[in-house]
Amino acid sequence: MNWKNASTAIGALAAGATTMFLLDPAQGRRRRAMVRDKMVRAGRVTTDATGVIARDVANRAQGMLAATRSRLRREEDLSPEKIKARARAVLGRVVSHPRAISVDSTDGTLIVSGYILEREVEPLLRALQGVPGVRQVENRLEVGENPAEMPSLQGGRPRPGMVPDILQRRMAPATRVALGGASIALAGYGAGRRDTAGSILAGLGALLGLRAALNMPMRQIFGVWSTPAAIRIQNAIEIEAPVDEVFDFFRHFENFPRFMQHIRRVSQGEGGVWRWEADGPLGIGVSWEAVITRVQQNRRISWKSLPGSEIANSGSVWFEETGRGTTRVHIQMCYNPPAGAVGHALTSLLGANPVRQMDADLVRLKSLIERGKTTAHGERVTREEVRAS
Image 1 (tube, rainbow, N blue to C red):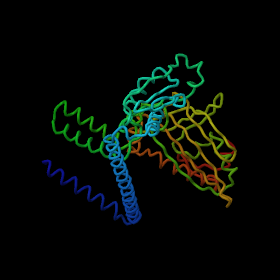
Image 2: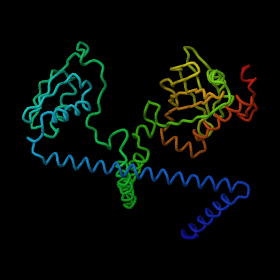
Image 3: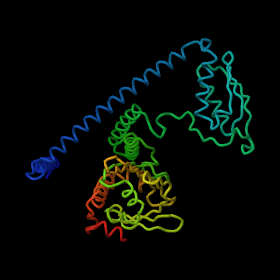
Image 4: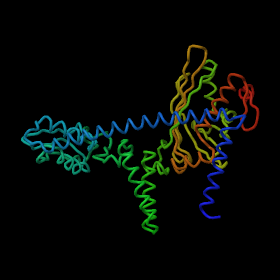
């Protein structure tokens, strides 16, 4: 069988499978409605995204036009106050203690004085030299050799400096589109070369496309990051029970395996540390240790995993009394799975979708509290058994 015949056969099989899926007498109507709803949502998301990109491009074009006019304008037309305002904007992006520095402007000369850390002197002077209207920078800064003895240089936080948009943690919509287009062109060119250099270029194009699509740093995409923020999920459900009863149920984490399908075991150790054991992709077990970071009676429970955990995670559960005798539970969590966002995508392809798992777990929790029974791990669980454990 040649390639053309094979392609035709695969296409026919795919068309037949799709037809059977949508026209099934038992589930066809629901499936068609689901496909229709997803297409409508995709259309709305595409429309919203197109609008955001168009506004971003328009704003950037206006900014570039204003910058060009500013550079063509004679420097003596810029007032000292405007130059000082632009210089102060640069301070906030370059130095960790901008309030310890003063700027003044006279006839195109920018006078900068105050206290600064040694490592920030050169980056600041370079950035100030690029401020429109500045002919020269007069350095009157005093370098803090021992910041521990200088109150004005204590605290603060490192600043990223004048970082291009493409190198920032989150890129603007227009930058993502431009990077995505460049990645497709680069990958196509590399694939067309059919040599080692072409393979490298194609791989680089694929990485850039991944960066543009996910809009997160590469270290976060591949899980080379200790902060649990690669994946964020949230959900909410209303339970017909008083808020104190629902809150008390959540406080007993050892009960979670009774209604959470993917949780194997939860046990409390020393120092308020909780050890969690769960099912990972392909049934491979994973574990982590976490501590409770905040508890507000009948209002909120927050947690975070300890350093060194296989799956770094953190999150919060809010409890809201609706006034109808019911409780609205809102869960928000973020986690960094092995291999980051790529690992999350592969896990989803294998059927272990965290969003669907959370949906199912909350439904089982609702059934357990309202009806007094549910089913998890193939076993029937009652509310009385949970209270007795």
